Image 1 (cartoon, rainbow, N blue to C red):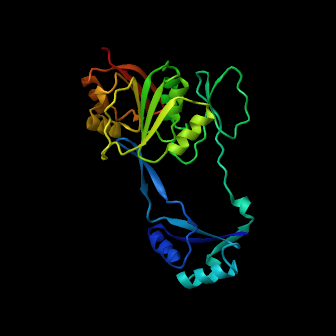
Image 2: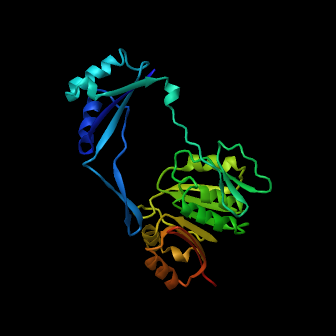
Image 3: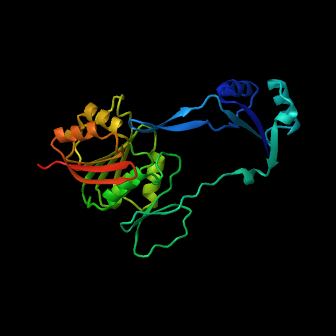
Length: 297
């Protein structure tokens, strides 16, 4: 049996409450930060609303703690000097509390469909990109990812080399491999190799895929090799920093850049123009922009 106890508290005091609970051996906690999404130069950000009240949820199971729920009622009353009627309580079978997140397949409109593990659909005459998001960033749901995917999947990358910067869960790397790239190097700040190779296996890929964990902006890693195509789906400010730090425009004559918002393009466009690139293709969904740059030799 799983037991849930809820305290409604000021968000600005959340650290004090969690520290006290940790000090008495309670670590199974959950709360949602009250945030307000705001528009910023590079896209969107958020502000935490410290004056809001939040629900701090505390979980325990009979297998781990004896005497529930009374043991936790008493502990919470003593630790925080709250009355019992101020503590919300519920219980249930542990499997009933498990949340499963199911993604709906995405038809990209170019004869390609992103197919998720829970899918039971059949797609006659369609090309499939099978994908399991797991824990890494990138599900294919965002406009920026879909913009990149359409450009990649409409390209012929047979026997080409590709560099995917900020790869996340590796969806763009998988797409490049499906389109025939002979080698893809995928770089991310996080350790995403397990997720990426898992998705490569789902698609039956035997291509040469190398995954590198590195900080592209402040780390020691340097990009020295040249590539036929480079993908960057991060954001305009980060892309400019990466290009400048690695003098990246010397490493390829074709880039697909996304994660861009329409109000923050000028510096990026000027950088590519100075490097001798022209816009090969530009796509936009809502405020999100994807651009393919190419330099003629």
